[in-house]
Length: 463
Image (cartoon, rainbow, N blue to C red; front, side, top):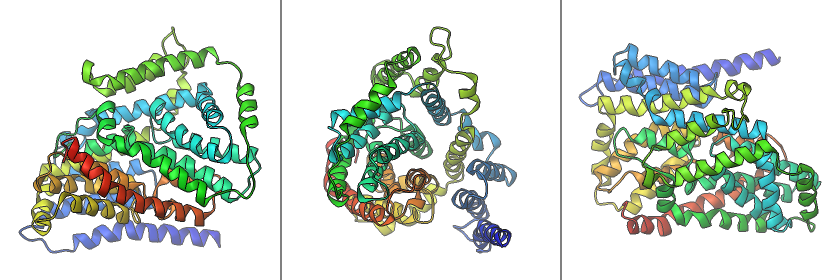
């Protein structure tokens, strides 16, 4: 019986992967929808459907897509695969290698977690805000998407140690871990997320960015995760008083003194952070920091990292990122963004920037129901950026920042692989509370964009 169900699942998965692009292929060509444009959408939809439905690793779908662009002659091989020579995939690679080393060779993440919880008092409210602070701190120290799973594991460990089971209290702690981590990306530059989005859009607009500039453009968002933490403490209020300070002090004691490897790693991380935040003075690309930081830990003077850390890096993630970037490169090469903009701008004529950014936000939120955040941002960042520029916006940044804000405002956990992993991987969060918190977050994010971020973007002259 299980074999039959599996076969049906595979059948319908491939029916969608092949059927949806085939429907586009049946659309007659015309003056606007040329054979070249049709080929682009058919091949791109095939790649995106592979990402969404997951019959195999997303990197395989990206390679099929990139080869397809070349085989039908949409763009030269050097254009399609030029993303591998860019800085974004190698910045992501550096993030993944650094994360491997920190997680495999040190207990730094758990040490930081204990310190955050002790500082915030160890009460239930303190744990909630401690998780928010932890999410921000870890994004600064070890940037990268997959670090969120380590934070979720720490949150689950706290719930288990305090014997919270499946309850409001455990749901609140897990949700604080999720929200603290992903909402930090609004003001802490994350190369595997915002870096990829900016890299894709660079096909049609200048999108050079560094940590300090990104923070400057988005500083009002700093308050937002703490606002969500406050809401969590009210909606997920525990039935009994929780005081976990003794547990965190004990756990910190069990971790003992910093090891020599941890001290060496911490020195490299601090120098790495200094490098990232002083870009405007040294003018060296961020990629050198992300690649050299983990490599330094291989040198004899440090001797922390091992061959295993290098061999277990999730390299398909790098291929996936390069594939996402190639969509923008090929689309721009054949004029797709301008074509979409020529159609959309007359329809948006006379609308304000606030209206457009509101449209971008809800467009992103709704498309995320059927696409992963990265697949959705990959597909739409270039045309939405082109439309914004043609409407007279000063830069691409407000549109891209708004897309990023919408991408991780979810109705259900399945919409984002990272969030699903953080939520479903431990099984102690009530789905009803997840939906309630994220719907509130979704509405508050929209209001925050309209009433706070749009005026602020005008203040810093990027809109």
